[in-house]
Image (cartoon, rainbow, N blue to C red; front, side, top):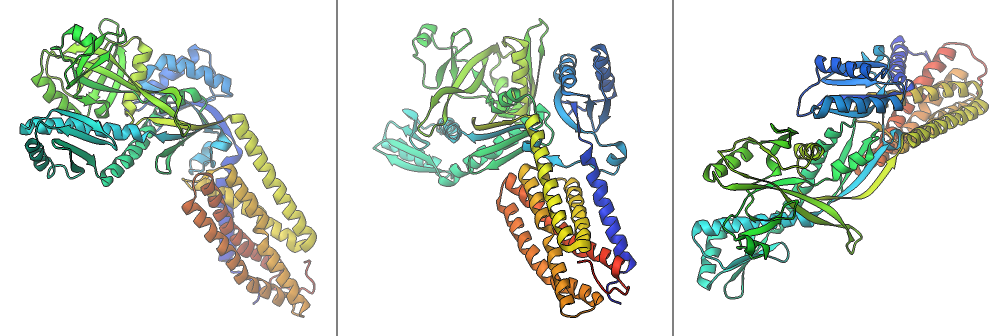
Length: 615
């Protein structure tokens, strides 16, 4: 019989719409200002911490909506942002640096919905508020470090082989020039080094010099490594800030995008993310006369660095260990109450430190603090020029063989020690980064964007419904019902997808989808009217209308879907957001327009004697 659906199709339609409605519901409950407490260095918050948090808030007379311990983190909810900020200050002072106390926005979804994993859509930076950074990796510094490693490696290998050289200096294009006393020694060095260093290109320069450069493949590998490692370290630093749902991704060859939704302390974020502090441990050259050091006369294997009091210290150029091997660092007072930073090294770093200190007991070792700062000068391209600042913060005699753990002192105050330990814990950047673009979106502006987006959706929906009801009457009401169901399904699917984030372009995609979602019903309704004009019966006209329009609807929506998939594949950020919502909207609109409206039409008209349609 024409225009009849089996029971299972009606049940399927009801189940799909019910699930979509269920998972769309959390979006109407909004968010609570909250404080999130998580342990650092892999330590999880416990019941003891929970009791401590409750005691601190009670002592400060700060009322909370709820305090819960979930998955090793404590989440305390408050009624407004003023109470939230007071709570954070109180908890920071009480908990110290063992925990990260971060501002957050927590979904106010009822418990019965959270039990079925129903959560609101994740909102992007433009809707939730937060900060956007576009950072550029300083490749010149990264390659300069590689050049310094070449120099150290050459010195070690030539000494090991017993080949005397007059000087080693940096050369243009990230190369190194080694000058020998005679041509014969140079040729011996070339023959020895070339088979051992496949990433280097050797060329004779003059009668007794050797020019060494890195291959293009090695330079390309170094650039890629600098970007990837910086991304990894930035992610660790974002975790130190305690930001929920951050975005850290590559953009182009040398740039990194960092988006921190919901963050309110933007100055702190900029300070932590852009900091380039690291440590170098070097041996002090005690054989140099102080007067010679003051006048700048030092051996070729040494250089002068200065303490905070501007006192010169002669250090060997060879770096024993860098901050790259630091796996953990904490700050606190020593036995005399002075600030100190406790350092833990990885396996390789521990072995290097152990082997070096074993052979140098009784000798002084210096801790050199290295940082890159903005000089205030711009280069030809308009980018800030970074200057390297170095300061000897500690000199101590090696009393015994050191291993994976030791401490450094000589730091001015506890705040400085805490900042240094945080940066070292997150990792030292492989190369300095510059913030070339910064955008801050306040929570108020984010809410304004949401309100405007909702208004656009509402007016688009109402306009489409009004047109359909006036033009197609009862069939217009049926199409409008499918349109509302389509919106519910879009929101439900967006809430279900773990990686989907709603942005302003995403809202534009939803509005566009709603505006064109009635196309399928327009095609169906016009085809039904055409069949009625051709003398078909009502039942035949409905059947032919849906069947005849089906291929056109599929073709039109399939081309849109293909375009959206391409946009998602090649686009970034907001373009992906637009592509996701458009793709979901196309699929759900086809389902509601074809299956949904057909089910209602079959229910109303199927198997009945109808002489006239309200269309």
